[in-house]
Structures are given as C-alpha cells and as structure tokens.
Length: 222
Picture (cartoon, rainbow, N blue to C red):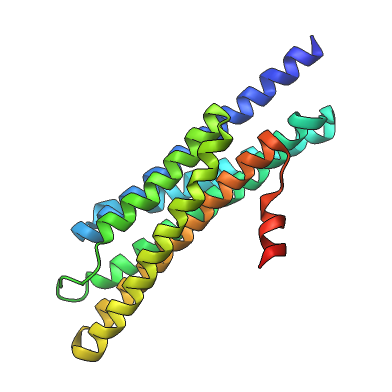
C-alpha cells in the first residue's frame, strides 16, 4: 500500500506540473498576440496568469520537497522528482518572460503603430511549438522528442539574431522609430529566452528518463 500511495503522489505531481505548463503556454501565446494586436485585455490576462503560475510553482515545490523528505525515492523516481523541481523553475521563468513581452507591448501602445521587419508571429509560433513539444515529451516520457527540441532552439536563436540585425538597421535608417524598434529587439530576446527554458525542460525530461545530465555535458563542452 505505501508504494501504491507513493506512485499516486508522483502521478499527482506530474498532473500539477502539466497544468502549470498549460498556464505558461497560455501566457506566451497571449503575450505574443497582445503585442501583435496591441490588445490591453490580453496584457491583463497574462498578468493574471503570472500570479497563477507563481502560486502553482510554490505548491509544486512544496509537494516535491515533501516527497523527497518523506519517501526518499530512489533511481528513476528520484530523477523524476528532481526533474519536476527544475522544470517547475523553468516554467515560472517562462511566465516571467511572457510578462516581459507584455511590458514592452504596453510601451508600444504609447507610440504610433508601425510594421517592423520581423515576423514576430512566426517566432512566437516556433517558441510555442517548443513548449508544446517539451510538455508532450514529459507527458509521454519521450526522450527522442525531447532531443529534437534542441534543434528547434537553434532556429529560434537564428530568428533572434536576424531580428536584432534588422531592427538595428531600421534604427540607423529611421531614427524616429528607435523606441518601437528597441521594444521589438527586447521582445525577440524574451522569445529567445523562452525557447531556452523550453530547451532546459527537454533536457530535464532526458535526465529523468535516461539519467543523463545534459546541462552539465553541454557546459563542459563550451
């Protein structure tokens, strides 16, 4: 019976993590849409979501640490619990980055609408796909899917570099658009950071399944 109860607790922990991931995904999608549509209502929604994400993070951490203290899990169960703690932190930071996009969006509302030479919708979709794939990898215990997310991260990095270059060029050519362009640079950077956190989640899924700490390996190779 104690073992069955422990497995039920692990399942509950996973369910709570997936629910928090859904909140983070909503925040990113809504933040990008708020910027594209200059929508104050969506900005407010993202702010409300951030509070829910912060609350969920605290509850998840408490539950995970309590499991570690009381159950002292071994092997794959220990790795799963540790992965949950790390993924939980990345999801909270994704929420923070979404709020960063909202802050930049609110600044653009004070300026005339301009069309910048960056496809933010495509960049947002690529970033959102990374989060969805990372969550799917977690849900299905799919290490191969998790590995593919790092290739997606390279594409978002490329888009961020291109945005940075194109927007700096715009500032040189049209200094009157400096504020809008700088906000665009910062939004692209927020999306790039969200992609990094999604990649971290994928790495933690691999750690859970295979016991391979890829973050450590990557830092050693740099």
